[in-house]
Length: 369
Image (cartoon, rainbow, N blue to C red):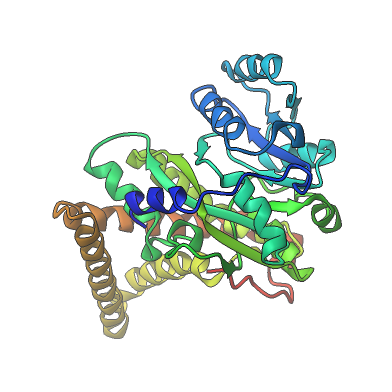
């Protein structure tokens, strides 16, 4: 969705003045580590978001930051008594979430990200959706904002938010009416729901939110996406960071499946692995088989055509012809690095029979889009 459209949606139909007596008590969880650059703006946006301060607590769960993050948070805690700093000695996100949920006192818990800001009304709209739409979980949409300027950064953002780049629905929502979905970012749930689901899987350095959502859905939980609730997510947009992140995402899709009792992925997560495997197998077999060579050529041609089509959509949407040339290599890097990461994940668990048996066990994958 165009950032200008997102901003207009967020401004339209602002939340009505809240009846404090009807609003549930709320715990805001913000896991962080070395976020001194962003944590202040994040807290400012949460504090000024419109939710009554006497109905809210903000728990910043810090993973032993080595920069000035803790000092910044303490400054806010000295000013606002509802802000608390909790320590996460193990440093990883699932541990931070478990610490935060265990320490939460609110009836509703909303998880937010430190390198993001939240447009006015974000919190109230997510909380309101739980009752208004009979949802067990809710969340808003990501307005992904580049940290750097330039056409490469714009291409990275465009790829991240395009279906062909594997974007989840909350990065590409259309319209302004709430809609049922299989996955939301930065969950907003009743604390009782989270306690029934159990703790986040602390073996998962990444992908723990997707795995947790699958477990919630197995319980019958329903989620709703609230397009009028908008968060500005500040993404790294240099190519090196983007490709490294893609590689790690792909690897942890597989590692998470091997370290969980559910399959925390959807078909879109496995497509890059299939693509890379086809390229590797075709390249090996092509010198010895004309059929393999033809199949490899067909895969390559189909990919080039699909990438060109997606790049053309981006260039037309952004009204920037240069994106038609820049987006294709960014798409290719995203797909190849994600697929290679998944392949490395398979190799890493291949020597561990217990993990391999768990991965191949009789479990159903998630169908989230």
